Length: 244
Ligand code: PXP
Image (cartoon, rainbow, N blue to C red; front, top):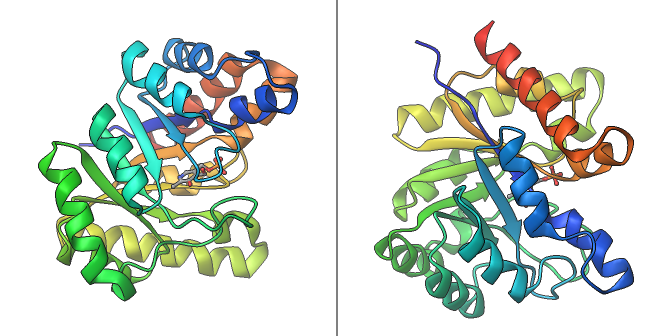
């Protein structure tokens, strides 16, 4: 039987547009409600250390006001753990973060930080939060994620999306192999970063991937066709690829 593929809609860049002018418009919580109406299975938001898009108040409102499961993207810091434990989102995705980067550029080096990440992940898991590690498609990082007790990994699709031709094929082969490895060692597998209408289908067709998290492209496309329509079209492409 084909497993259903979930779509987590990342609303960070609704907040980016709002923050360009200050004030309240456009409201990320309204965007979350629109995403729910358009068929999203979850809402994803990244509270960055520098608060460049999502704010503390946004997180509080998302935790209290939306019905869909909330996936809190967070750096592995004490400050973010405290916020996660306060709001108890459905899920937390641990991401690497450097202040100077434009977006989350690489995966988390779980294998290189096992001793610091194990207790941090343990506290979140104990609080009933489903923890995922945002990693590049490398078996070492998958094995380390399993070893520290994370139940889920999210594979970074940025390199696949950025590459072209044979280089893209090579990146895709890595994602395919990593998704199979995740299944073999008992990890739930998600994927995301940089996905668009052009790049989503091969990833959506990987039957062992349970969830895609997509944001920037959907918010950009909303300028032309509306947020609800952009999500509906992405959802349709995902379903088409998965059900083929
Ligand atoms: N997954 C993770 C872990 C991310 O950090 C991001 C970007 O915030 C995404 C998915 C979504 O990426 P994009 O906005 O490029 O679709």
